[in-house]
Image (tube, rainbow, N blue to C red; front, top):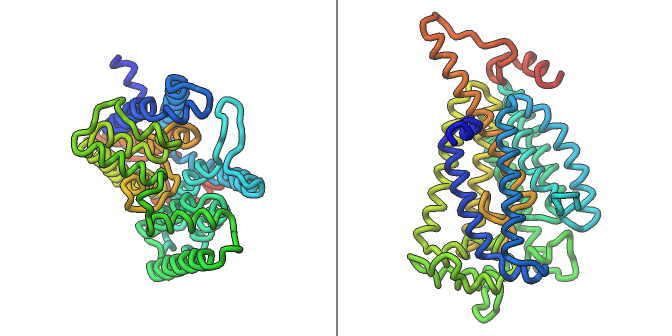
Length: 403
């Protein structure tokens, strides 16, 4: 067993947190998938097995990516994002969110796009480190983010918002021009608010899924307690669970919800395990985020540091959004709970995220060991070809990444 754990290179604490969340996921999905399984002429056990396959596949991906030199992800992410953008345009024109693939089933390109755009944003900020405060750099980086978010927007508003907010948070900590940052943020808030207000007052006008967006916000602001909606059932599940919960497998409300295993799984967990367990899950996500910050700080290069920070922000924001929806603090978004909701494209992409973060953590550990071994020397000499963005000149960075 100890030898098997040796393949989990990088931050051991982060691996432990992720595995704990996945164990919670396996129990919760099996318990909450009853109605959905019946709807699809299946059984909870079959749903559980399918989910288990996705979980195992995600960790295989994570372990594989963790052994990749994370600097290679910079160049790969750019080309992969361009390919995914083509798929996003295709699904937008097809008025759907998925592409059917062998083995995987329904593949959602936007899930992969949100990971890649964070990496590309980190790449751009790293390459332009010496001019990052220049407004022209901000314009170039924000153009990439807005292009991806704009394509996703028509069919998945919450995903587009998550991509935009995550990348702009990363840009803020990446040192972009703060005045331009604030101006664009305010402009986007006004644009989104004005657009939603327009769609709400013009019923005959619809762009993308604007009717759904307006309906969700209206339902959240003016809830009907007598309606048997997913939101109301989720709140009843939380109220039923109380502080200590009703016991694992005792859920009643999951049998009334089609998305109990997915969007509203947090409510079912509280129903069965209680509010204290919901707080524990929040603490686990907070620990995961803090480990990401620790890894980012220990990284010697700018790209690795920004990539880990951005991916950590992405996980944390998405988790907060899902939990807020479950307790009624936000309107329904359709965002899953990372590492806990039912598997699929989202879970496989989480494998990529974990692997990328662990790749940086593994590199940090290796360099720390080299520095310790070289403690008797006057200076630490970087191995040729290992320097990251931030440890080279801008022209050298461009030659390394773009060659």
